Length: 191
Image 1 (cartoon, rainbow, N blue to C red):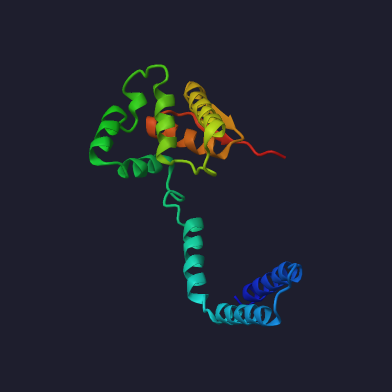
Image 2 (cartoon, rainbow, N blue to C red; image 1 turned 90 degrees about the vertical axis):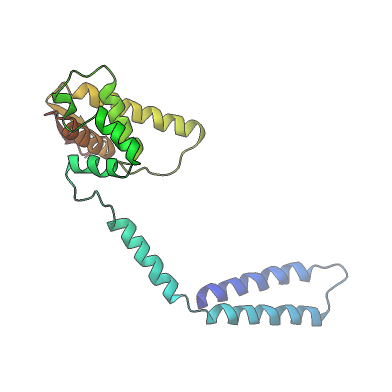
């Protein structure tokens, strides 16, 4: 905190010197001295602040955010069940009635149905979103997620879904596991 206070004071003093040094009618020495005294007082006040407890709280929150993903150690189907458990009771009932565990093994799916389920899981937060998007960037991001969901549906007819995209890999793995498909997911690494 001392470094912040000192740097701030130097910047203010430098700015005032520049500003007050070029006043056409001049500034009295008393006014400059008074301003500098106030800056010194503010610097001392800032320096004396104890922010260590605040930093401890923030460090704990940052650590929790990094380590606190409750789905981190869950298997693919558990992740879906966890997300569904966060819904309101009515919404949870409606979704699980339409998409019970292993739903793809009990009925023939309509075209787009698995893609819609995958997109629902994305919307519920199965994968981590990076940033907040608006405007055309939001449209592009949604289109990319929709294409991922379509690819996941197409891959459900195959033995393996391969992708370079970590999020698409996680989404596909959970979608296939919960729906009851045997399709494996392979995350490729760029070299």
